[in-house]
Amino acid sequence: MPRYRVMYAKEGPARYLSHLDLIRTFDRAARRAGLPVAFSQGFNPHPKLFFAAPLAVGTIGDAEFADMELTGDVPAGIVAKALSDAMPEGLRLIEIRLVPDNLPALMAVVDRAAYSARAVLDDSLERETLEKAAADFLAMPEILVERRSKTGEKRMFDIKPGIFAMSAWINNDIIVLLAELKTGSSGNIRFEELIAAFMKCSGLRVRGNFEMRRKALYPNGKKDQEMLW
Image (cartoon, rainbow, N blue to C red; front, top):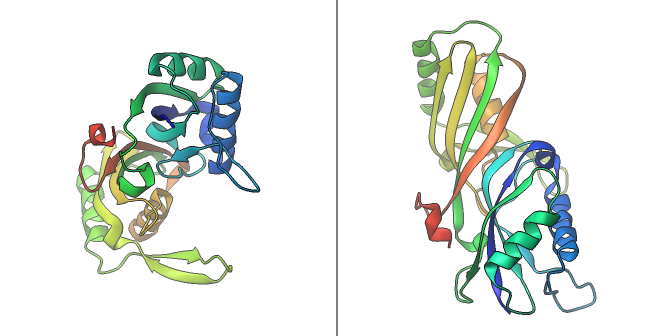
């Protein structure tokens, strides 16, 4: 069955959709668009929609990826127009391509993500002070965060091995954090965990919450999104 790879943005009100809600939204949009979406076999068939990596609720996604299988060949341009017209506010299609059958699944190749976050600082801060705080944070032998297991048990987890890069800068009273983190089914690092750990370590405070954004997804350690096609 033909497989279409979709690049889309998740922004505005859509950024508050959970991953499960996102799957349902894509399914409903494809049905409204009249696309012949393929379904799995078995007792509980589900649409063949496969997403690269779940995005935390509230986080903006600038260039997210999903695969969609159809039961028949439809020109990619027609799929893009029909699906785009059926999408709700905040889900914006960027590009759709028909991809080869032997192209690896998204979840099998995506292993790195680039993020940014911004917020208003409570107090004024010198650039050098912020840079030192970031350097001291990354120099820690471990960066431990609390996670819950599937059984609800609390345990500490070291996220440092999954931090490939991190920097911080300031513009007037706006603090901006940039990071490249491990993502995928193994060793996944949540950006919100990194932010919380850094803010706790540095003692900095912000007004309200950070606006978080996933800027890009990369395959197999390569900083080139074009390789996902």
